[in-house]
Image (cartoon, helix red, strand yellow):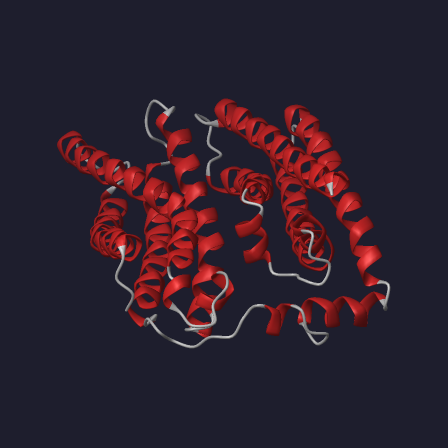
Amino acid sequence: MILNVYSMVGLFIDSLSLILIGWVVLLSLQLARRWGPAQSAEERTLVEERSHLVLLVAVILLGIRLVNWLFFYTMLHSFIRDLDGAMCIFGVTQVQRGLTRVAELLKPLAFFVMGAWLLLHFLDRATPSSSLMRTKLLFLAVTGLVAALESVADIAIIVNVAPGKLVSCCTTVTDILERPTRVVPTSIVGPHYASILQYAYFVSNGLLLLLLAVTLGYVKHSASPGRRRAVLGAVFVFAIFNGIIFHLGQIEVHAPVIMGLPFHRCLYCMWQYVPDTILMYGLFILGTAAPGWALILDMLGRTKETEENLLRYLNGLYGVGMFCIAASMTMNTVHLLAV
């Protein structure tokens, strides 16, 4: 185990998170079971008082977990100097390869689920009778379980990364001809995959921006909730597809150009050498998550009391999605042109 300020802070945050998550999940399930129209006035008051405490703790806890994604990579970066052969975060991820992959998959899932719950919570707060309370409490239990898995994975990585471990450099994996990000596109579109990815990045992002703009107008005037949900779902599916194109394009085409290293394709190195690309990635992640959050809100948050505010939230999320995708695309384009 590597002991430094970052690992100690990480252990504290993750351990405290686990304790609080366990309490929040158990109590939210109990309150969801007791919440209903058959309650007496006294029982409803008691449940409301307890639910306010649970929700307050949940908002603070999930807010901390949301920013934990960035802290996680900051902590891994602090481990580089204690490992032999590590030149960037990639080397740190090789110490516990399978475990780190699980953690890196859990991070975006936890981010998405926690963001969706927080939006549902704030939507419900605007209603006079908390019409989404039971749904919100049940969703909180699911969100807590995902956050707990993320915390466990973080703790396992901190405990199992030992100093002095010999690891491979990123060039031995990301720059070889047999790398998956090259083999898969080549098998699909042929040897000119790099130029195709270059064009696909701009076409796909442009189409997503167009879809977000068109859907924004459709949501404002749509009278059919079923059709609206189908459209929101289709846009989110395309946003995920666009994310795959973005990721492949960054590895195979853009990262080498942005770093000025034509044969090097490590994203961890790009974040290290060109730090503002972290912001570019953050904006892209927000822009991709926004239509997904809109879909979740439309699925779980539609009641008579929330209809007006729900439309405002959907419009706001699509507006945020457009801004973030456009800003990320602009940053990427500026970097490519500045070289």
